[in-house]
Image (cartoon, rainbow, N blue to C red; front, top):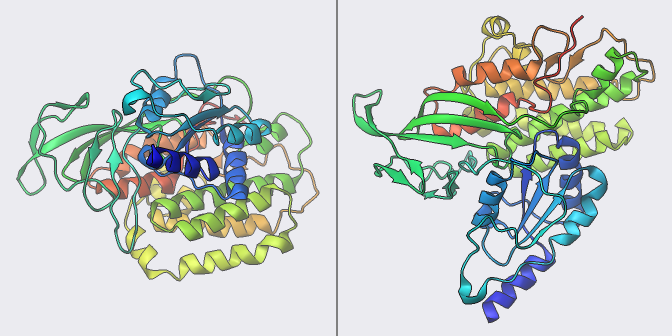
Length: 424
């Protein structure tokens, strides 16, 4: 009882919050992250490290299974809340400081854990593997599959091999197959996402692994709710409809989108402090702060990233996408302009963020035909994130498991908007 009381008090004062983000919930997620930072609350990297679950965004009635799976993996004491939009963030966070007492006898709830749920419920998928930890020291972290089974090992928490044959925790651990060296290794079929930290909301990646190497990958997506415009592309889509949109509004949205992507890539690459700096800058840009308040800090972040040999060595060569191949695949925007790998895409985001910062206070109207959004042309034959999703499986085979998280983050497709396109 004493230990349980102590844990409850810690969770009440400063809960570690696991975010379950639905596609379409970008604006709410940004507000939640800003609210957590103001309170000094940590974002949990996995269910095992969490004491609270916050469901972000609205989902369909049949989309709660993977959220319930996440809830079931969080140890007691715990609390659960939900927020559909930015206006309800403070109330939703307040609900997380009332942790649920453990059931009598110290057991765990088995049926999805609606006890302790507060607020509007959304949808989501099941937990996949955890993220890459530590690009320099390579500190391992337990990673969890969609049924909560843990694989222990270094290099991002994914073990170097799998000795299980047959189903484990409901997952088939699959067949033997030859690897690149002619060895007979277990082939593991595993869904990654959609409930991963620093992972595109709504993305499910079905991978076949041998050892720590991706053999095949396929993309599935959870569609966003109907109605509304994708947050990152909203200014350009409104302009295309004939609405008056200031160039500075679009520039700030694009700059912030790039900083959001930079923060995600740095986080999965094991650089949490610079990732947090990128996110603070993102929030300052979106909050309307004058460029003089954050422009110099953006320059310092870019110089620090460029000056890190360790970061360069840990991301260079991952997910190489030459410009010619990008064009053939319909990819536009930063991913095509980078003409290279994950590290090149990171640098392009930073360069583009700096360029857009110079336009952040431009009061002129955005032209309806100016359709260069954060991830590419919005008036092409396919939405830019649809092209990124289509090319993603081609970039993963042969990559180590931990590197696959970096490759996904370096493309950072936005599932709020794959179905939206403007045709000129």
